[in-house]
Amino acid sequence: MFVLNDDSAHWLIIPQASHAFLAMQVALHWGNRAAERPSPKAECLAGVLLHDSGWDRYDAAPEPDGQGRPKAFDRMPPARHLEIWRRCITCAGAHAGYAGLLVARHFLRLASWKIRDLEEQGDRKALAATRAFVDEANVIAEKHQRELETDPRFANATAGIGLERNLAILGACDGVAVYLCAGMTGPFSLTVHGRQDGDLEVSLERVGDTIVRLRPWPLEGRRLTVNCEARRIPARSYGSSQELADAIADGPRVRLAFTLLSPGEPA
Image (tube, rainbow, N blue to C red; front, side, top):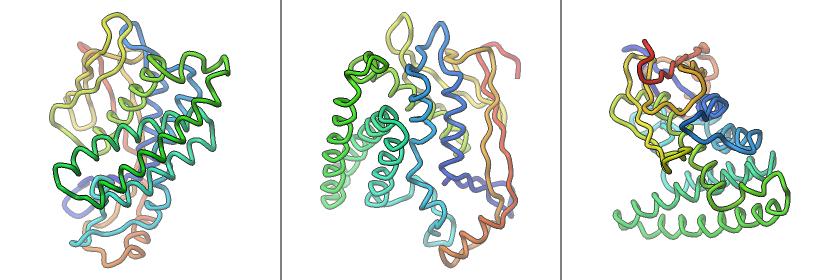
């Protein structure tokens, strides 16, 4: 989940599922003369929508941290991340094999970054667990690849540049959604596949509370409005997971809308 300050007395809680729904809205409009489009589109959209599906169980029973504040997704211990990532891969694969392949490869990429951080921290236990996850996820990804590579629909998407293109789109749409849902304001950039000049570096710049400009523009049209849902809860210390879960369930639903702008498009 994401935790945003709504005002001095309330937090907005955005579940991972709503974050993923926002990412899928971006993916739905991804691609133009500058940026490659996802293909096959339906399975790629499924991968984006389902990439965080393993978080649903945690978001239904969230943990408060040591100060009683809701624990956001990026504050989980490595073991919990790995448990959730496994469920994400399984859930995506149950919907479509190619979605499972994308999500497995997506988390393999995240795991490689986690391994680098754990090596620097010297956390041997977490490092061993993460390497075991990498082995498991590789087996799943390779199984999906073998099953799909003879299907003409996936002929150009199970390996090489086609797979890398779709993985980059998943990562970019996830990155845009994280930037919006986490209330980030600083410089942020994403690397995707361009149509003519190889990799395309897309920068995000917040130009208003709910407005972000992308340079260069990788989407259809000139602007795009995307939505997600949050629950508004009192900003106080919560003593247990159940107390926090009850507050979230009882909190009023709030729809958050964000606008993405191309260069030169007026805010």
